[in-house]
Length: 81
Image (cartoon, rainbow, N blue to C red):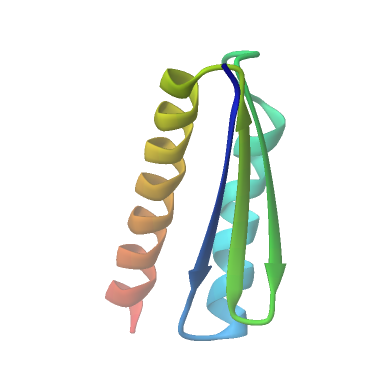
């Protein structure tokens, strides 16, 4: 079974979206497993994360990882304000 998930996250500003995009991009290029592929793009104040996986367990794991990284980045940016 294969699966695809698209996470589109609206942020407070284009600058914030670019910072989070820059933080996530290396994670898409050095994956620890070949069970999932991920791409990240930024459009305006939104970050779009597309995950393709060979099985639902890998899809869930990748989604959880990327959501946790976005959350950590957002909390860090919020603490700087």
